[in-house]
Image (cartoon, rainbow, N blue to C red):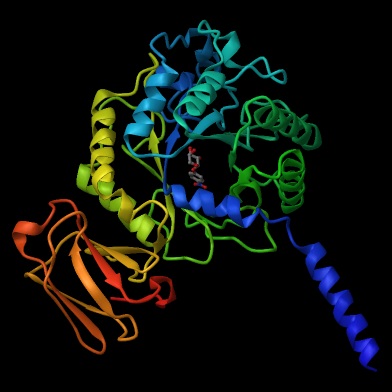
Length: 433
Ligand code: JFZ
C-alpha cells in the first residue's frame, strides 16, 4: 500500500515538473531586479513622420508611404556612444532597443529580410553599434522584438481594416521569427528578449511555449518577458506562472501593482508617444522620479522610454531630464538599486524599499511635520535620518513609528529617510497605509 502511494506520488511529481516551463535561473532574475532602472528606445524610419511606430501604418501614414520611408532614413547624427552615455548618466543599468516593431522593419544587418537598415541610405548596423557601446559602458544589452509583423507576407494580419493576407503561412512566419531571434542571440549576444504583439490571434499558447524553450535552448541566460506567450491579459500584464512562458511581467504605461514574489517591469514613456513626436508633452522631473520610486517601492523595475529623432539625436530636453534623474540617483541611489519593494505599499504620498536591516522611505508630500506610520514592535528602530543627511527625532510605540520631518530637511521631489532596524527588514510583512 505504502509503495503504491509513493509510486503515485512520484508519477504526479514527474508529470507536474515536466508540464512546467523552463524557468530562468534565480541569480539571473535577481541581477535583473537589482538593476531597477533601464532605458527603452523606440526608433525607426517612422520618425521621419513624427507618427507612432507601427500603429500609424495604414492610419496616420498611408501604408505605402510608411513602407517606403526607410529609403529616406538617414540618421547621420546617430552616435551610439552618446546614447549609451546618456543612459548611463541617467543612472540606468540596461537597454532595450526596438530591433523590429509591428511595422516589420529590421534595425540590424539581418539575413532574413531585405526590409532592413542596411538597405537605407544610412547603411550602418545601428544595433551592433549600440551593442558595442553597451559593452564599453558596462550596460546590459537587450532587444525588443515584435511577434506580429503587419508588413510581412506570411503574417496573416495587417492591422488595416479589410486588408488581410490570404496566402500568409504562419508556420513559415514562425520559422522567420526563430531565424531572426537566433541572430539577435548569436550575433548580438542580447541578454533580454523583450517580445510584444503576442495578443493577436495568429499567435498561440503553443507557439509561445515552443518559442520560449527554443530561445532558452540557444542561450539559457537570455531573459524573456511574458509577452512571448498568451498569459498577459491586458495592459497590467501580471502573469508569471508555470502555465505560461516568460520570466517577468510587463505592465504598460502604469506603475505595476505591489508584488515582491514575481519579477516585473513597468514600461513607461518619458513623453506620450513611444516613437519621437515633435513637441510631445514631457513628464516633469517630479513625475519621472516619483514614477521610478513608486515602481521600485512596489517591487518592480522601470523601463523608461525615449524616442530619438529622425536625424539620430535624442532631444536635448529629454537628455537634460534624464541627467536630472541621474543626479538625484547619484545622491540617493542606495535607496533604489539592489533593494526590495516595501514593506509599505506605495501610495501617492509615500513609497518604500528595503535591504538588510534598513528601510528607505520616500516621502513625496507631508501635511505637517510629523510622519506617523504603522510598524510592528518586533522591528525595533535604532536610528532614523535623512539619507546622507541629518538625524531625525523619532518615537516608536508598539504599533507605530512617529518621525519628525521638518520642512527645512525635505527634498522637493522626494525626501529619502533611512531607518536602521535591529533586525532583517525583509521579514516584515507588506503594510498598507
Ligand atoms: C505595445 C506596442 O504596441 C507599443 O507600440 C509599444 O511598443 C509598447 C511597449 O508595447 O503596446 C501595446 C500593446 C497592446 C495594446 C496597445 C499597446 N493593445 O492591445 O491595445
